[in-house]
Amino acid sequence: MLSENCLAFIEQHENDLLQLIETLCGICAPSNQEHQRTVFVEQWLKKQGCEHVKVDEAGNVLYFYQCKEHERWMLGVAHMDTVFPDLEPMPFSIEGNLMKCPGVGDDTANLAVLMMCAKYLAEYKPAMKQGLLLAADTGEEGLGNLKGCKQILKDYGNRIDQVLALDGTYEEAVNKAVGSLRYKVKVKTEGGHSYGCFGNRNAIHQLASLINVLYAYKVPTTSKTTYNVGSISGGTSINTIAQSAEMLFEIRSDCQADMAACDAYFHCAVKTLAANGAEIKVQLLGERPCMGDVDKEKQQALEAWAKTLIQSYTNKEINFQSGSTDCNIPFSMGIPSICFGAYLGDGAHTREEAIEIDSLKIGFKLGMEALLKEIKQ
Image (cartoon, rainbow, N blue to C red; front, side, top):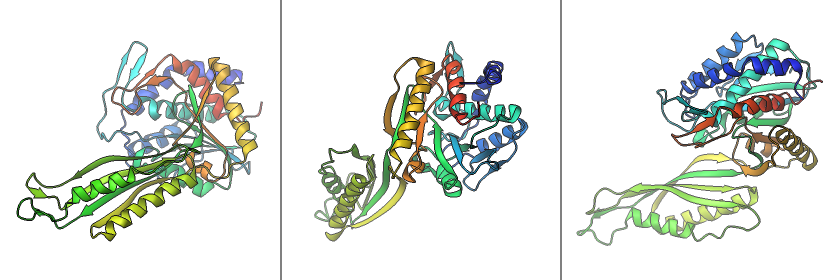
């Protein structure tokens, strides 16, 4: 339960939260290009009086609250990057109860709530039962490959015993990691004139044959394992036997063993095609781990806490699901983790993304109480 001074803080700063979301929306942050947001978040935190703020080598902005006083820490994280490649501010508007902008919800609104929590800590200095590390991290989306969270857990994983990722809405929570492997596959052949060199190997045909073999793979029924060819390209013209062709291929699973089995099948299929004379290059673009050996009782306790907390604000059952989030990294290391958000909205990962402004009345309180889980009452 939030204290009276925390509730007063939230009421006093509701409009400031909206303004902060709008300001952040005006600072573009494609994955691996979050520098402008990193600078803004760092300076903003310091202006609020936050001490022990640093930027690490991955570009994460870290706020260590009472971490020197405690051996064990909780990590609260929200990602700065968005899925959009734009380097110029994207259209922002408020239409009735909707705040519209690409990335406004995922994960800008949640990032703003985390930043406001840091402001509260700096102003009121509540005592904690364990240290709290608040992180605005990088590289959560796409080929960011969870770069930021990997760095945080590499540096401080031995101190962190629970993780809360503010991401998504408060209608669902992620309690299981979906791992992934992402590849670029390029095929080269001799090619030639479509008539004069007919019979020469065609790179597009070779790649298509590989895709056909890959799609013959039977996924297990014990987990959700998927694969996908996301794009293909190649060739020169209609009267040219293609000398090169390439594709992007992805494997996902919520089971490490099943992901490894699908990956082994993929590499076997590639080797078979190469044995027939085609030149094939495989480049690993991204890798996200699955679940590790997480203590079952501690994980269930964290899920029960999240369920009770969210229901106390929404009076609705929370939907738990597997997903690919910053929690993948702590999960893979055996650290109990949970992921949910502080708003309601629609259109995530589209140019039409919008959040419901009224939902932040609940979301602001919910996010604050979640991040302050280990506060001394």
